[in-house]
Image 1 (cartoon, helix red, strand yellow):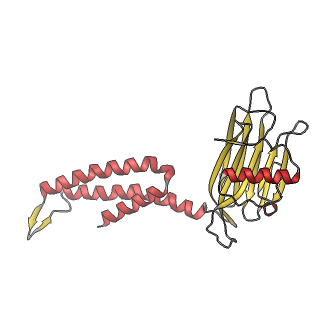
Image 2: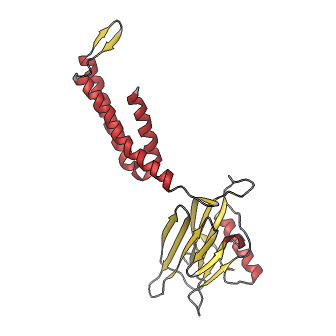
Image 3: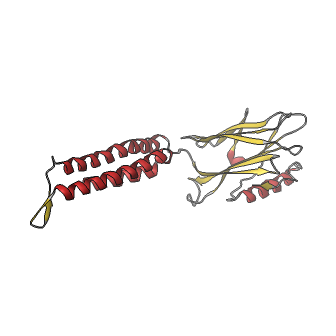
Length: 251
């Protein structure tokens, strides 16, 4: 019974730790199949039946195999439990918003890129509803780039998004950002914005300056990238920003 329980615990925590499951799952399956076959075979070969029950000595070869089988499961489960517990305690997202997923779209055959953070807000009437939390649109209406690179992620308090576009013979077009989910302040390069005044940000390449950062003055609650782009274009038209007029999504 203890062996079955520790197997279930090992399997549960292996499933909760995807970054090590590519090692743990094959090891777990291979060792359990091997030890299960060996233990059962040894049990049938060395046990005796008394009053309809199978008995065997714990110090016998079969008993030792069952002990090895048990402690192997303990050895596999322990690091998975420690790793998953550490993630649960120290890396649970905090603040007023929880990022549940990210979506990336190329724009106009790499004239730009859009990164959208979707998730939930605790102060909403329906806090389980998923919506756009932050959308960052990097767009250059005058040229196309060859490749794009990304770094960032969602920590305990801050969600970081850093994007760079590269082209031969051209300066790189990039930005770095950090969103504090507790204060609801977003920093893009050296500028700081209050997200409640608008959660869609357009970073535009210009001929006279490295970039313009525009915070669109409305909240977007879209759940799809196409709707975020549509929202951005409508808001840009309202404020008289013409550089997004030709914007389209390519995936």
